[in-house]
Image (cartoon, rainbow, N blue to C red; front, side, top):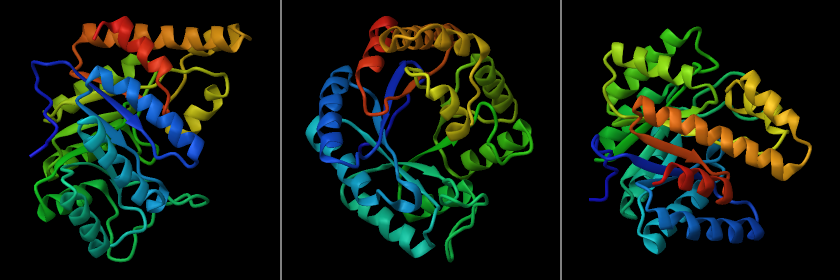
Length: 285
């Protein structure tokens, strides 16, 4: 059975990609995968569109990763817009295709809505989804962690209590939301360990490569941009110089995380290979 194995003695590397919306986007993604597969990542996670909008594409892409690249896909799945029977049917389909690794997420509210509402006979929280998946079949389950706290949590402490529930429900590892200040991650991990969360926690890293991300990242991902990075980004008017500066920042960030003793890196690729490759080469994987 092809299950993700995060051996504590071996430093791990993984990537996130998303199903493209156009033929041109698909061609670009295949080129990206051709390049990134050479680094033999432990797994490649495939995102799941809002409300299951990319469900078929997610499954199709995961199968291609498994069959064409001989790599382990991590299939995202959310609670959004689905009831128990629909979720069970999808999980059985995933299993029938020989896919055994799931990233279980509650998911964001549908566009235009501020509050999450579960589907008919669905789930309100990720820990409920994890528990249900464990009952359906023997999947390896990952969950999300939020170094700066989930936007809907009243505090980091409350958010970590929710994270512990997900692990107690059956999650085997945690992938964090992207962040740019390592101190958030260190505090997050230390407090999680104090609460008894023992599973591997992989830091999510995404290089900032254009000025628009300064405004988009906090609103889209809930990750703050430290002053040092803001000043760095605004220092350059040339796109290539800005991209290099953002990559250099991520390299320094990762080197610091390595020194601290992280289990590995989960790199958010945005379906592009260039910046990710530069980070990997600098870290000497």
